Length: 387
Image 1: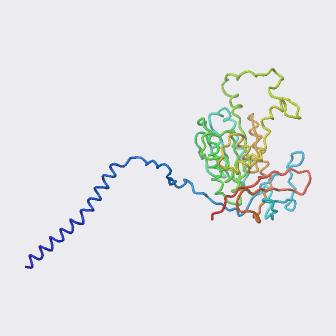
Image 2: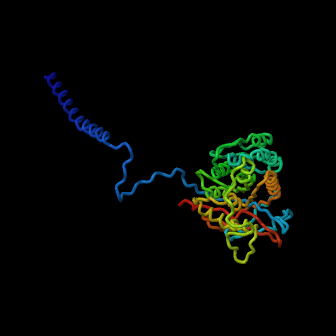
Image 3: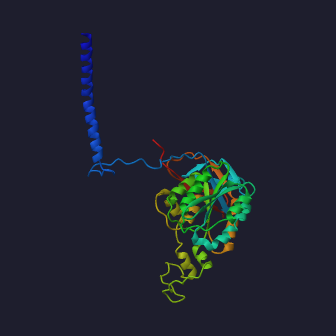
């Protein structure tokens, strides 16, 4: 009886297992069949059904400004640098609110410079002149306490040398510049320069100097986005504007362009109202642009595409300067002038108070001495703080 009872118990357990496994096996069979019939690609949404959006590739970064450094260049009516001003001569306003100047420095803080150099085939004929500028950067710009990184670009952006105060290494980097492809990813190179400078110590002055054409093609970054980050990192941008036209004049002779449509000494367009039409006025006519207003617009509309005069806009937006060059010696003169200005530059520091936390913050700096011209960056842009 005991044996028979155990046999019945085993049979009951076996029946229970089969009953449990039957729906499990059925579920697995249906799941396998559904997977075999499922499409290999993504399922198109039904009309009127909202599609869930993927998370953004780059999370939005909210930044807060604790201290603002404003580089200032002051000149007289003869365009000569004024170097005898003191802190009490300056007044600084942030969004219309006067700020307390915490510190004033006159060309004393050591420099960290990101040198952005175009090496594309477009300016191949200018490369010999650019290779000779290494010693100008080390002697005229950096000085004994400065350091620099060199970033080259064409179809790609390459860090040619990291931050170093080794003058020989910097000069050798310039001497070894080689021609690259035909691309000009200027904005991506500027973005890499901003990222590199953000990591430099706060007590150093942060500067970008470009030796490049005012042309961009193929960059992933937008100029306005780069300039926002440069302003927040207290970076000033100077530009030595190369000319592909000047490079072409040094290269192989090419077929000349079409003949002018108007006889010599005449103009194809009517003069501007109230102006006298001359060859010089016609050359300057295309440059009749409010660069400051354009720079402010570009920073505010950071995702907008900028195709015209990007290096001039970058200089105005950060308080630097742009110099267009056509001759080899002009390249050297432009770098020498930048170095002279950097070592005669005032830097005002303040903690912004009494202003809105978001939006564009206009910086206005005045001096209590008549007849002087003041150049500084126009401001900085802050995103809305997180809720």
